Image (tube, rainbow, N blue to C red; front, side, top):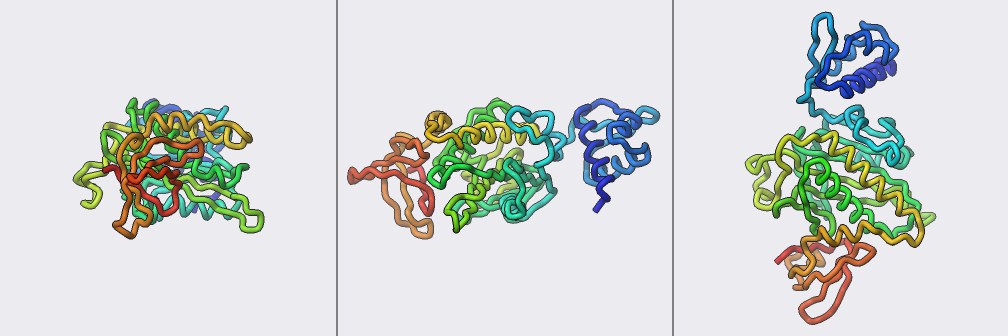
Length: 337
């Protein structure tokens, strides 16, 4: 591990290079920005190169970070974060090359007491997790894998709304950055052109003494540039990916903006969750026939028609025998017929 001063020099060097991406920055300017020597800048650049950053040196001129650079970093996200919504800058953003799971790391950091708004990102996951214990395919450099730590002031009755809020936030961010319209399959999957491109896993850490939620972990995995041939055979027919050269740092920053913007409203008692209206509009299950599985380990299901989304985020269905029910999460899963 680098000494703290070296880490700071590297972070500040990367910040300036990211802000000037594609343009040459002199070693002198980098040294002034980081308050270190030119030799320290050279060491910082070499360290960044070893991590894979495409930084070129221009003789007697300085350094340039190539436009093609796509490594996730707090410094690259910083220029796209809305300071009015996310005023913490890069302090609470942690990026990693590979993690077992961003949600697992987020939980660990939550127990360490990190503040509300902390974000964990990884280039890849070795054991990415989806809802109901499923695996989430997470190849390095091919997707966006991130988790949020939210310190709520609301009770557990609003927990399902956190997942619906994250779903809407991801759809808004994809529309803003990629210009693509996406749909939501209740409760936590994002679809593009009929294929799943994103999964969201929300987990609560409760205080058993008070009965309140200490933290909510929101995990998001988006397929950004994965070909069908590279996907595991078991998901090849149903999974998809965003297309083109997706600017992952900007997409990550916009998701942060959108989620934190929606979450600000959650702590106001009695406030109608306005994102639910958009959740309904983006739903791909409303007015469709669905199969409701009460136990995912069983093939038993009930036929129903999805008729609405409740203000609390539950799926309202009518079964074939005429009974009406509001589904929440837990062990329930639905499939379009």
